[in-house]
Length: 85
Image 1 (tube, helix red, strand yellow):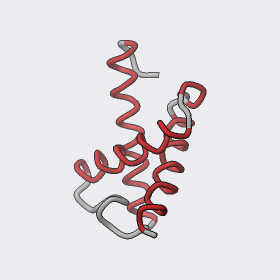
Image 2 (cartoon, one colour):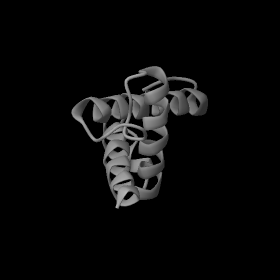
Image 3 (cartoon, helix red, strand yellow):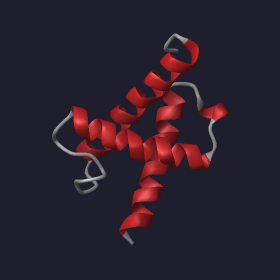
Image 4 (cartoon, one colour):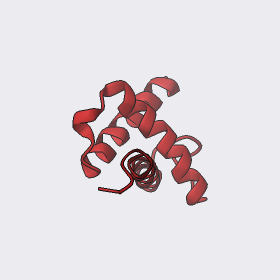
């Protein structure tokens, strides 16, 4: 049950991050899930409080994961286009 919750929450986080960074038209559901999970890992590294990967599903862990996903998309945009939108 944990992995299903992980995929669903990762997909929601990836989708919200892509809406914030305006890259939603370029991404599908699979990439949203990957961005959400990897972004949660990045957020967990930056903010030592915890993300959805290693903490329970709380508002703080959700926000940490969302910030990590936005940072991940900003880095990808910076590498791909040379500027952050």
